[in-house]
Amino acid sequence: FRSPTLQFVYVICSICGGTGSGMFLDVAYMLRKIVGVDPSTRRFIGMLVMPEVYEPVVENQHIRRIYSNGYAALRELDYLLNSPKRSYIIKGKDHTFVDFPKDVPPFDFTFLFSNKNKRGAVISQRQVSGDKPVAADDRVSQYMSETIMTDVLSPLTERSESILSNIFTSITEPETMGDRTFYKAYSAVGVSSVKVPPLAYFQDMLEVKMADAVIDFLLR
Image 1: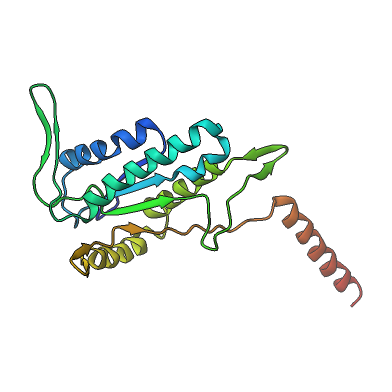
Image 2: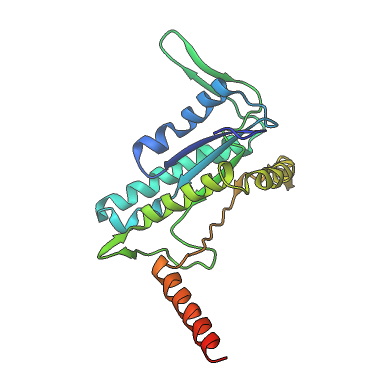
């Protein structure tokens, strides 16, 4: 997505299966090579779904596997976000596709999506219309899409870019703990919504207001 001042590049996947957890870093660095790495004009954003989101719909014998995949993916990601020695090379049989020998992280912002909200309550299924439930993973997908729409297509985009620029300046400054250096690598996102009542509600309210006005006029 492009805004007047920034280009947003999103990598969205879960880290509990074989496909997403196995190739999301390759995809991120290949996009870095194609689009460029200048943080003043580009924002690389990773949106990763955690294994617990899929636990309710995965068979018991596969639960351990999805958590193992998630753990391995996060270990790799954490190294590439935090290690000053990080480098990334993708080689083919007779061609090098990506070679970042210097300090280039896969993402500028990394969001980890769980099935719990800020208070620790688990996101459960909810009824939206008739008898059709929305599963937790679908709700997380909805939160992701709403976040992206707010970032790039809403009236808040310009304000959001200003906030992101300030945050980006802050998170690029590492913190030292003992002999280890940590970057502020992970970010949080909040989503809220305004529910507009159905049109019939406004029609009823307007009818009552008009009736009150007519009665008041006739009683004068």
